[in-house]
Length: 422
Image (cartoon, rainbow, N blue to C red; front, side, top):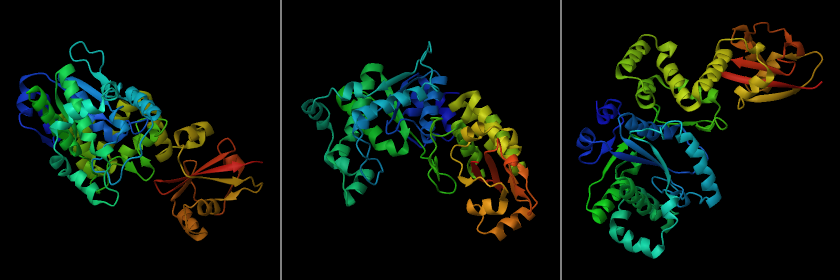
């Protein structure tokens, strides 16, 4: 099967320019996707273009991951309600280096047949002179066509408007496509569907200046079945950098996938075969409560991003929290695995603590009476063990290393209690 067929059955083709299918069926190509260095890490939303580049490479095509060290100094206005804060050169350079390391996990830069390339458009954009750029590139774009773009119209109609800086972004991205065509015979650009206008503008520039045809393919913009933006949680973005999103948190993001999205994520974010995904879909339909599809997605994507060690850490933490006894874990392990868990510090008390008081003061219950009812119903656990004696007080001896209690209400609400002193 050609790569086009692979992308098609996975549902990864949202749109394409004329001739893409024939092109990919008859020859190997060089294709590229761009990544803005707006942060020091990529997030799960970037996995779609990253893995698409990797799929191209698996089918013998040469991928280019282009980090926007130059365009990152400008900012892409596409479907942004306000202008981005401009980053300093030093910030962009630091972000580019972080992104380089992450992309290297997915693309093979040593392949003998179709090596991947990692480039930074600052190499050529920061050397462009203003007059040269306006004469050689700007003259091929009409203001009429640029203001007709939906993303530009929205900004022009807003109170803030759009600056010339961001208005010029499509020209810079188009120039990127031209440079990659000249240097590497790159004839295909991929990106999210919000990049359609930028991609076709680059194709048009290649046609005008080189008299050659280039192509574009856009991927779907991901929304969850509940209508939320993919990759966002109450805590913010789900990052690929383990220092920003721990493997356990990363793993739990995928475990908590809505049943309606699970099969789609298997298609988009794993290398599983069509037969394997069909099999998992059938198993999930028979036993939805066991979340088979979500577990496979979580395990596979965590392995791709954090390696086998990340999977082991995440699954051990999951087992400890949801089905095991955490009393055998050390304080250091608990704090390392669950760095963002809600916590409360209580002063040492020689007579110990009522669990009802800890639950209520920690915000897990609204009142002491509510806490007592939950204890009686078996909905409360302490350090992974069911707590059903409403009259029993916790002592320091019950705490992990005499310092921590892990309280759980129901299946998913947790609270770390830290003992201060004696």
